[in-house]
Length: 269
Image 1 (cartoon, rainbow, N blue to C red):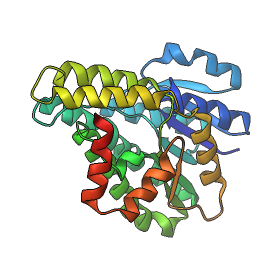
Image 2 (cartoon, rainbow, N blue to C red):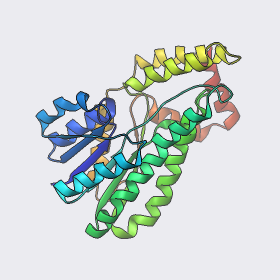
Image 3 (cartoon, rainbow, N blue to C red):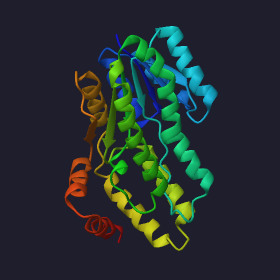
């Protein structure tokens, strides 16, 4: 039985994936700050753990506990994420740094912590949840997109480093997926930029999110992609799915930057 650690497991993609993998025979440790929201996961044989990904001691304690109990971590799913939106000019640098801490540096630190055991076992799957926002950008999302571009590049470089040890690095690029992050991000956007020189763009982004939220995919779509990736003998480097993902990535590949920018901005009105 393979042992899985998944972060950000108190809601959305993380929670759904934890349940789905447990139902399919995996030994799942679900980690998040809001442990009280993971109590129901125990009904599926899942072990909830407290984890604040922004704190070093919490990251170390989480991994050490799993290794002490299970003896190994076969699959790491870096799902915890922060989705603050706001104009670059308006956002405090402290919030920008926090977004990188959660979306990039905490994920990298967890990879450091699990790699020695994976190398020793000559087996491992590292799954990094990116976004189509790691390839396609929207205005007001500078720091979110920068962090997702970073996790894509980090994954590409790491893949080449650890392949020799039997470890695969897989990137998941969700499109529109039902998540509380959208609501939280929109609230932050309107608070930070709603009444500034960028207010018209903030309103446009908010309207677009409200419209796309209606067509957002259930997180099970991404959970199934993750399962497909970790069970493939030779997994693809990237799996994209959920509402609008493949179409937007296709347009990005065939259109020039300027034309793609015009297409994106036409949705902001």
